[in-house]
Image 1: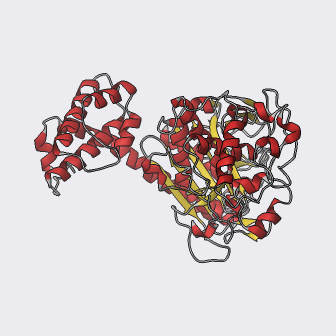
Image 2: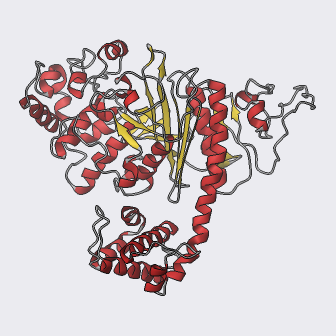
Image 3: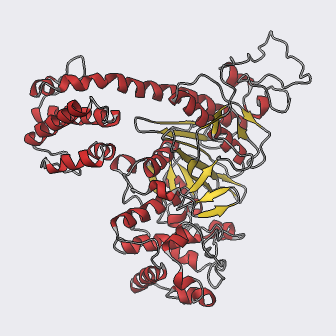
Length: 567
């Protein structure tokens, strides 16, 4: 709670808390009674002074109230509370407590939003799970609340229902966190963006060799890539790797699945020793898009670990800079753990089938070893881009550093997702209304497909995931519907969403119905289906199927089936 308060308060108010000598230790709840009283007193004075100018965020107010109430009550040994939810000990200590109770309406709003999104997201998840035959997770996060839902069963033909807190491998959704951790060190001055990466990588490799059991014939970047070292590798910067301005030979190549299926796990050093990587030429670079390569982020992991003490991959804490409240939502398969060690959800791939009993889906460490629930992915992306808890440079991460065919790439960030590029435009939630770009990343690994994106205009993050790498369209359907549902509920806009089959990039595109049109009823048992005719057929949301296609159990414009609509 203290970390959340620190995150939501502006820098000048945070400094005021520090200079008032509260003697608080965020790693311990064992505060002195004097500390409790001083904290409550200062919280109330801050509220009373700034409430008039409306500077204090409602999150800060709610956290201050919850923190002060809880810890003062504990210190006073008072477990009782009155009907307002505030303990008598807290109310009696300082008269200003009553002012804070005015925030109950704000708390109710956050609670109402959570309940509404849980209900709406569950309908979407159930629908997509039914149509795809797979497990589905959806998540949401903003400053006030977070939501997670899931649907489907943990394995094909199984009976166990997927829980909202069940984790899925996230593949490249690891990259934004790795980049944010690098930027945390850049914020502190420990690293520089224009710093050459190879000396740090060489030093890290040297530490590993000294531990013994080193079977490789190389001990440096120059040994690994002799033909590219002088002209490229030796001068590659941290920024080049993060923005993929220069492409390292990508380990994620044809034949990798066979190796992983047989060996189960490869540590970062084994990845660099793969025939797809060792001895292969690097891309030319030149300040623009060099090409996508997950090897870049394996090397960045070495940079990050070396800059923070040199811990080896199996001991390095990838969540080092995560808020404590988020750490329990995420896991990392950095030590050969299998998917089944983290989740009940089986993961099905076009390569080999079910990877649940394998470590393969978490291959490549800081490039793609993360696992989380839908809520966990949404919360992580919100923390990275919507707060300063991990890095002060979330916005800088999302600035265009490299140009790619479908938008832009920043630092571990696919920026302008569903912005104005081509026909994969989901940034428009209502007809003619643009809510701006989306920042974040997609993730694809053996048996799982995920996406989690942040809208900087609305300050919300939404995620979706499935336990298959074969149904990108279904994942994007889930995301698009959930994203636009979130927009409508956050902004209190009436409307429904539909999915069009007219887009080409992912096969789908989210097109919400125009404002002001009531939903068109779907045909029930006693209602005959109207013939399609020359115009568009009615759709679940009332806007019409875009290409005049009929609706029905196949999904109604490709998405919503009758049972889901009636529900």
